[in-house]
Length: 336
Image (cartoon, rainbow, N blue to C red):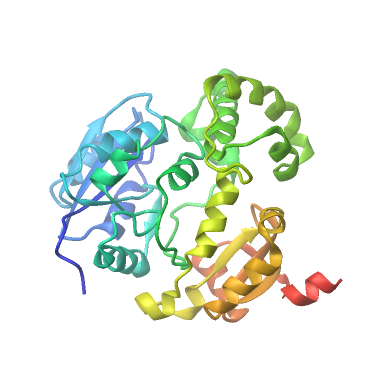
């Protein structure tokens, strides 16, 4: 049952995604919500397509050429109705029923910050809103604004699979070698600033092949200002720590199919937070921890109710997000 005590505003920012925006918006649309979108200067017809469908989806569209992901979201957030619950979404992703249920559940708590993707507008603005970052803007915001609960459930997926990292961004965000260099530098700077990294974190978290770029970028990032909110943990680690601390069982809370209930944490981060702590927290909500290889992070701890969930999630994403054959119980992996 959807909460009607507060108005709901869905918002986001987009650039050159004409072939995905309607499908994404259709998946999040609900009659009780406003939708506010910032277009960052699209040249592929995205803005025009958004205008065409605006009446069908109660959609308001604004242009801000050159805006970063963080700034684009901020410009959309401030245009949400006063007093509304707000949740952001990515317009190259589509969302399932658990996304909607999580919103209803979060609003029903009455908290101004129930979930990392759901805040009361005024609360988020009072905490500074979104930073002008093109990467790690969400990690920076979660670490700064906080959240009261975390539901480890798969509720969205990319509409198109076109690679990872910069390769995934190439056609949309830059043209030519100059654009590539600028985008790569901006991504490196914002990664360091948004995740609140120290030099030791660069060595700890990233492959050695990336260090020749990241270490010089750190000097520039330090001059621009690095956002860090914990003495011992960078923002990336802090968010995982808080997710574990505030875990709720999606099966119990939003009646999720247990095969969509998954918690994943990179092993490098898990080792710093404490593997035994993670084991206890996952088991407390009925998840069994495994050590698996994950597409982006490599070795990871994955909490599921059964290994069949790995295959279900891979099928949902339409690619092998996890290497199912690599998974083994965490306790067995730790004994080796």
